[in-house]
Image (cartoon, rainbow, N blue to C red; front, side):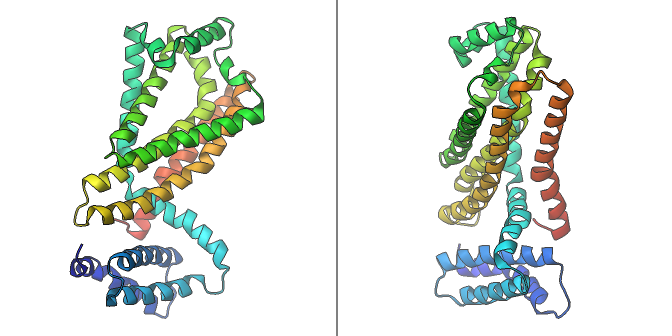
Length: 320
């Protein structure tokens, strides 16, 4: 994008930010934090494409002023982390909300297809999950413990391995977005198909409720954040397919920074999911109500962090 277009596109926003920084009365800290994020993003872009321009110097001065106003009389390191978690990540989530929605819809569609395919084709579940896994699961069902697979191995070892594997899948869904979103779509679709076929197997043997009380203890968070990672991958792919008024490189760089923030937010959730799967899921038969409470709390946490909080802040701070 040409410098003139860049200035024309953002000058009203910069004027508003400059007014917020120049007035003597206190401004809402959330507004200042949002302004600072906008400035640093624009400054990074200007430094990359217009390193010798006056607009770069202007944005640098504004960013320094914003930084001083936000962080004065506070410990910068603590506030920087707080700003990243409380402001930057929700804003990043909001900015890629459409790719996140597409990711969810594709995963749900794939799960339904997997369930129905396994229902009408008895060999489908074996094709997807493998004979050994299916035979082992059927044996566990007949033994009265449909989720016995989650009781194998040590607690700590299982938690570590599961967390690493889940993070790997998430980062694959993200990285495959470089293949114009097709790779991300494949990861989501294949995992959705497997999930649907897996559930149909339990449905077929009449243990759907019992199995779900075990699977979704960890699966609520695990599946949700894989979908989030898929949304990040779609955002990357779309930035290359539909760069808008930016060059493809500029569009990719801007979107990659945003999507990476969202992707990093999934790592703690994967740790929680891995811990639940390694330490809690194997004891699902102790109390069905405890399972339900964990599942509901996990779902509420995901919905709040990735939907409610970004929406609330977007309305308050008037994010686009």
